[in-house]
Length: 292
Image 1: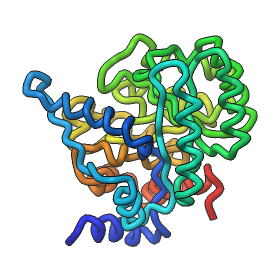
Image 2: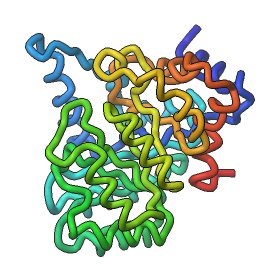
Image 3: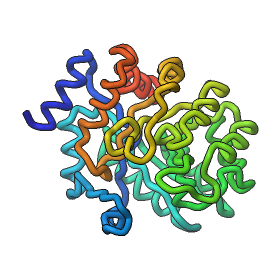
Image 4: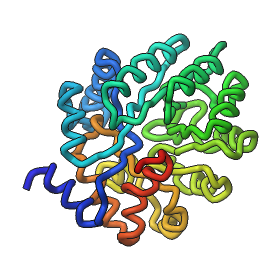
């Protein structure tokens, strides 16, 4: 059985119309090649871990494969690592969304003078989700330059997928502390914590339990690969089940070192029930983004 058939059998067996994946990466080709070079470097023997890119293909092929899998909505997660990049990336992403209607119009941000205007322009142009990468950007999400940005996004109700956990390697501003400071000032901000906050799973569950608009995405968690370096604690599964209406499917496609279907099967193995799986793999994302 092909992987396409296995993925489709998964969601068809749950009675779903398809999948909603909130954590997929599309970006300018030269930027994506740099990302792939970074993961290729991790495959050196000295690093002790191999990270082959499973879906190293042209953009059109990657879009076609997600459609074949039955992913009815996905994102173009992209992120700047220095000032001056966000506006350019947002322009590229707006064009990508125009020519790829099943991609949720994605934008990004960076703490720099003019950040509020940059984000406002993206929202006014139709951005439906933002990506913030605290680790790659090496910035404090509680930076005062971002305070009006978070306020704007909270008011607009636009979700932000934020990589803020300290995995796969800690950064100066990763971990729950900086994000907790942001939420204390903007409790209605719709933050989607990428990778369930790996490896600080329980601390980010604390935030999800405290703030009703905080969500968690499943990216790489529970897979055999993810369990090698940051296994989710079994004692926390009841808490994950309890916030099941705010857990969203994420995969990191195409930058994953295993087949797409493995993320789905890893979630199924948790034994949290078909209702939980339906919510995570489709219904929660469909509700968040108003999909019919």
